[in-house]
Image (cartoon, rainbow, N blue to C red; front, side, top):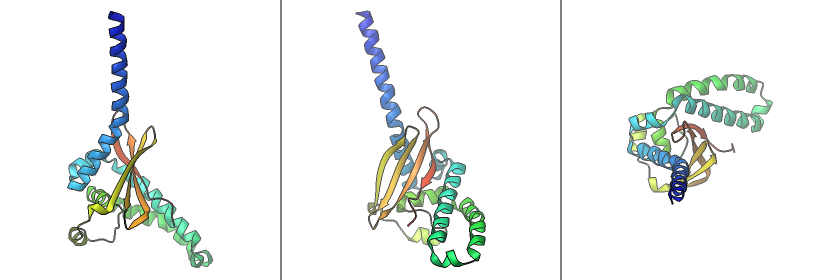
Length: 183
């Protein structure tokens, strides 16, 4: 009888561990979305790895810009396109470093689109997003990456995926973004 009790307790402990391990990104993603919708800057600062997120956004924007430059027939024939390809990463890098803030993450989650640096502060405050138009889907990409994919009803082909990375056994932080394939 004592041995059966120990086996049952071991199985129960293993089941609790597996459930906690699998559910931890759901709780972290839910907390991130709630903090973003509430505009909780301190909460977002705790849940976002800003250096990793900035690096990911730079990579995504540079890849998208390079693909657009290669696919644009006007750029392919231009001698200045090479210069543009050389300067673009520096320009994008500076803009991303200045723009990626808790407020920008909050706007991204609320609006379901990548940040637009051209928006002024007054425009952001005046434009109240219609949260019903943004759909969220959540899922694992791999054991250490969990995606919160935001899709707007009016732009179903332009999904933005916020990628949370595992930081320890049960801890998760927003560390990357996937803007989807360039058009």
